[in-house]
Length: 128
Image: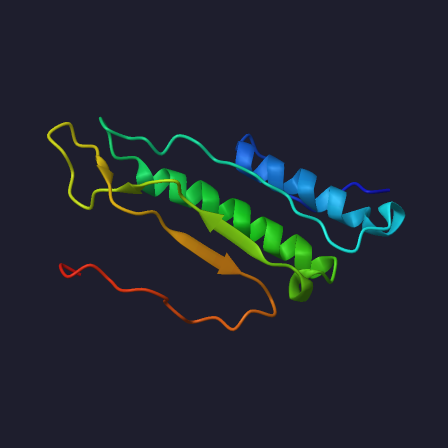
């Protein structure tokens, strides 16, 4: 009854985690929940030797896309906020191993149907 049948089948952990959350959100009426908070994680970003960041971003993008589509199908998109963040930044230039090193700050973004988007809060670094 709480199965999310149209969700893509994948071996990507983040996508599977979002699918589990979507199924749990589908049961909200039976749980009598006014609001839920779910915490998911995606590791593998500490790339000192090889820069595969584009692959990690692709995984995150596909996982988010599927989750947003499911939220829209459940008519929950306008009452949901997704917050994603990183616990540390990465350098913009590659190191001698073709990877990246730790850098200052982290990054966060929010998405949701009722958010006033299109804003960047803070300042870009001077080189950008």
